[in-house]
Image (cartoon, rainbow, N blue to C red):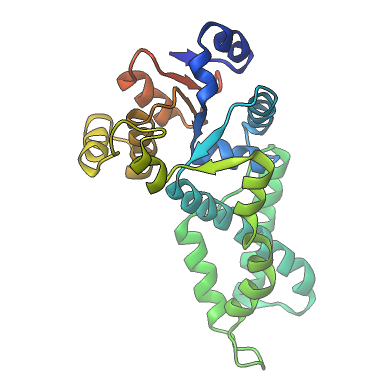
Amino acid sequence: MLLKIEELEQKIAQNPALKIGCIVDTNVVFATSFPLDTYNDWGEEVFDSLHKLNIPIFTNLNVRSEFIDLNRRVLIPEGLIDFYDDYSEVLNGEIESSLKSLKTRKNKANTENRTFKFNDTDIKQFMQMFKKLEHSSGKDLWQLFCQYYLLPYIENAWEKAVQRMKINFLGTREIESKEYFDKHPSWENMVKIVGLSGIGSSDAMIINLFQESKIPLMITADVGVKNTLLDFMPAEKFVLAPSLTN
């Protein structure tokens, strides 16, 4: 069943099992972490409500990895623009023009109130460009950029999100003890979800975790995850998602 955040407290009164906890996916954690994300306000409201209602929040290690990768895709262009602002007077050629163009694209995203992300091709383009230049320290420019403009901002990103959102891990101990599970999530079931829905394997893993758990509520800001859950979810389980999901 699909829920709205404003329905959660009433639904708990009707179904106390919802107090067991909820599982969150990467997209809702990421959205709540970045003010310009389309669903930031919604995510903030979700976690405020969960904390107010004392509903435990769970996720898995795979979500942690995805979260760090999404941060990488946001923080690298932000760092490159900071680098450009710091050194624009001494830059020239391909690096100068590429960074200037990047700043224009990022400013456009800001005016449109959307999070600006790189893809892997974008990152490799700037990596190759920066690696052509060597610093007097013996490191190339990309190594120095990462050391001073990426690492300080990404190394504690997950820990900050966990503390702020009060996220707990569901791992081997919880599965083996059967505290939250009747049976193991399995590779075969994950592949079956991919085959029946066409979604990615990472999304299928968190769906499989939810399906095999005793936890009755899944929270997502991803339309593919939401639709797959609604297609295959048992009647006694619930999904909370934004009313409009891109």
